[in-house]
Picture: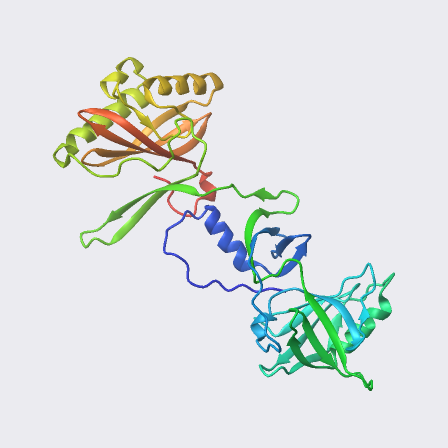
Length: 389
């Protein structure tokens, strides 16, 4: 079992349908942790599916001194039994079976596999090396084709554990007393994929039969805020698009100049972009495009469009042929400062509604650079607020 209580996060405002929001919501609802091969799995309640994490980097385990009495080096990682019984001549675990133990630091419980049945129990430890397993051990009751006697011996040994340490080889040793005249130990090696010394990357989520793969990379977000007379934020809009690394122009979706110039031309440049949106994007008067876009420079950051008017025209031809042309329905807002002007618009592509932010850089009365982000608008019954606009 696992219980995740979220701590502080960054204060960025994310869409309720964003991957970040879904990730945190599902993460906090996780109820069971288990491993599927090399992957760490979180099971979600009420048939909501699973979250699958894959190891992307494994840090080396801490340097071990002998003896070591730091419970933090034991808890929250997987341990695999390699020997038990006489400490001087331990019995090797039966081939084809795997006995494991994981001590939770959140709730003092130990759980794992006895080689056939899953088990769990409470525990109490001391920093001086004392350890007590609070029996009786709870376990499933499956019939075991092999390893049944070994499992029974393991469970019996766990219930009589008295001490713990990590030896110079980095192995966990649990001393127990079953009444034999010699010292007895359970000897564990670290699992192949330690839980706490590994960075885990989410690779899929959702219903196990319809898992959704996580989009590689980051997202590009345009955020618009409205403030009151006291400069306090009172309203927020955003458009979020997955970051595309391989672009037609060779530019990224977010690079380019950012310095604001020509503050005295703010209204003039806003009027230019307003006319461009109304006459070209909505009106479709392609013959007037050079009235607005420079014929000498048009740097493009839309990942699917090449630089220049030629690249823009080529893209329009491709999307019109494929039926994926963007039809601008309404320009909801034009915001500008100096040489930068942004249009926030309702757009339709193949009959589906999208929200667009188009950011333009204007120089000497012509548009010379363009960035954009676009996001599909969910059906109204799925809105968590008043919608995109």
